[in-house]
Length: 347
Image (tube, rainbow, N blue to C red; front, side, top):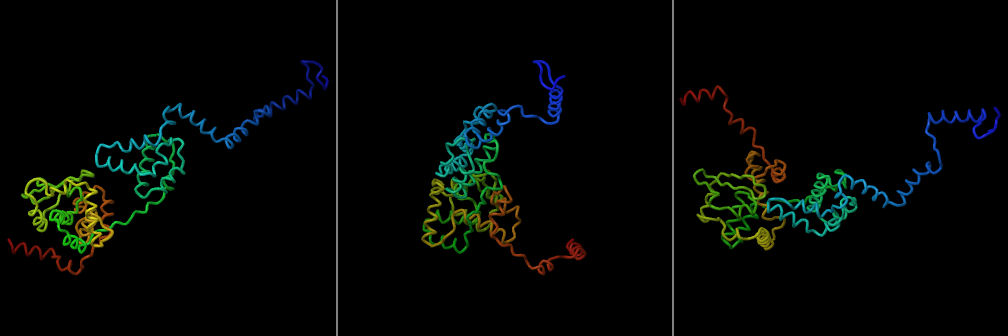
């Protein structure tokens, strides 16, 4: 057989051996069959880098196959879902929060096109409450499967720096009471000091909440529905006796909005040059006083209507529980044998 190709069907030994060498090579390692096929992966990478819109278009095409609405949803739909709660107070609070102009950065933006930069713009324009609401929206969208991955990973969210809230002191409370000329408002502040309720819960109390037979004052918190039940002491009894015996305990205050009650209290504090307190400071004061006198935590938590122990400890964190003298405790301990003798004498 000649070394060169002699016809259309004749091959040389060199050509045949070369041919089988290529077959052996193809069994061990894939061979690029053409320049066009070898260049295609590189061209695809270059196109993706130079034309980012291609990536988004291809991704959208695949996403539409799984959920047709996935590429159409905007944050406005998430906001609507977030505000759709049954409790009126929660719904109104969320609707007010969403009106913040900071959310305009993402309000009409599609979910699949949202980036961390969009969230950072919202965070820079808002405060602590805005960040809390944004995290709620993000978690809602992620939980519903409307976004496939976190926009900002949990560990990379900015640390929340809460504004310190303090309790109102006894001296400040007494100054407010002495300066207040409105009798109903004065007794309202006194009641908040005694029971530590939220301003709305205290304003809505009626005579139906009072059980004189068992000396109990009970009500359900408007915010959480938690039951608060407190024993009526001497000071609280004296105060309740001065209030109406039928219907609402505060007939005029119950008709006011919470912002109006808060504004009146701030005005009084401003005239007295008392800073850093609000009507909610009475709840912090009650928790602080309960911790200071050593009230068991479960009773204090129940009295304030806190369903979470962590929330209750946040309220009472500034309170200092003073440890009694161990000597006094030891003097009150009666040995078991001595206790038996006392019981025998008594019998």
